[in-house]
Image (cartoon, rainbow, N blue to C red; front, side, top):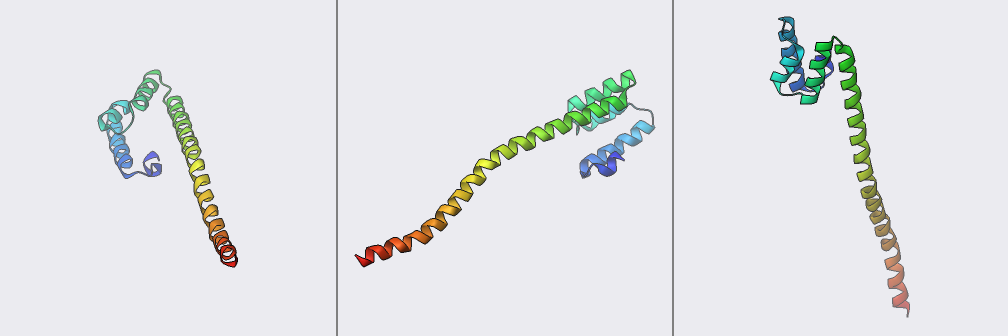
Length: 112
């Protein structure tokens, strides 16, 4: 199920390789460590989950941690994009105002 929902071809292949190795009796943390695709903290948490017999809890914690990291990254990106968008919109409005007022100023100078 994880392979099908990964959304990344490299991760899907590594998950598939790990699946076959786990079927043959090797530990999940060892197979993921050999792939060198997953972050070390994830592998360490999986290893602890395997050793303690609480692998589902460890995977749930990994999921929660990743969710928090993505959420904080999105917030940081949004906070950077907002000022840029304000500047762009201000520039567009300023350009439109200047395009409307410049002919008026030129006509008033022509009338004098």
